[in-house]
Image (cartoon, rainbow, N blue to C red; front, side, top):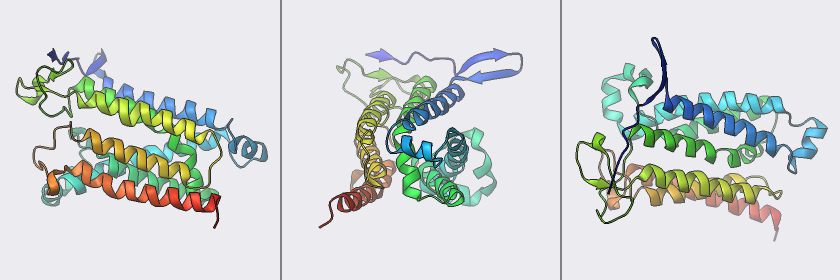
Amino acid sequence: MLIHPQIDPVALAVGPLAIHWYGLTYLAAFALFVGLARLRLTHEPYAAQVVLGSWSKQDIEDILFYGVMGVVLGGRIGYCVFYNPAYYLEHPLEVLAVWQGGMSFHGGMLGVFVATAVFAWQRHRPWLWVTDFIAPCVPTGLAAGRVGNFINGELWGRAADPSLPWAMVFPQSGSLIPRHPSQIYQFLGEGILLFVVLWLYARKPRAVGAVSGVFMIGYGSLRFMAEYFREPDAHLGLLALGMSMGQWLCVPMVLVGVALWLRAVRQTNPV
């Protein structure tokens, strides 16, 4: 049985300035996105579009800016709406208190959808064309975020069999119960595995919407499975059918992903 190493969340402190590991993982996520997106520009069909001037490196920086805004605003609003609406209806000003914690991936994803839709509208490009481009560049950022969760000792897993070799005690949980290190599961699943699958799938030109569909199916399915090992939010617990809020939010995500992928397949193989 392992003990969480209790890593200091502050990576570097210089006087009153404190640099947190969690902030560094966000920077790593942004850097990975930019690097992978630039590599995507060398793949077809984007390489030809770069030559024609339809895509450029400046587009990547602009998409990142829009995406960051979407993640932060959507993630915060999503958390307030999905996970604790009654509290934030009574304390609306605390919706702005992002420093108190509370972000939702599914809300952040919706925020990115809106942000990329605005980008696509401004550049006169099909929206799914944009989402197909960025989808394979996202999972490494998710992996970086899960590293930050583990360093902070947050979002720990459910109770595990003490004989499990990697069962871990998280003192932050307020108990000495061995738990699943669910942050690591999610790092490996929706981070590394999803990245490999999407990157290989997207190396070959696909019909518009296919890559976005695979991302939604892949993330939704992997997150759904990981939720069986992750401790549900204390104020929500398990909901209908014994499923967590995270699992219920994954259901429509997977369904939309399947619809997108089937639509793309029909375009590729018309009847």
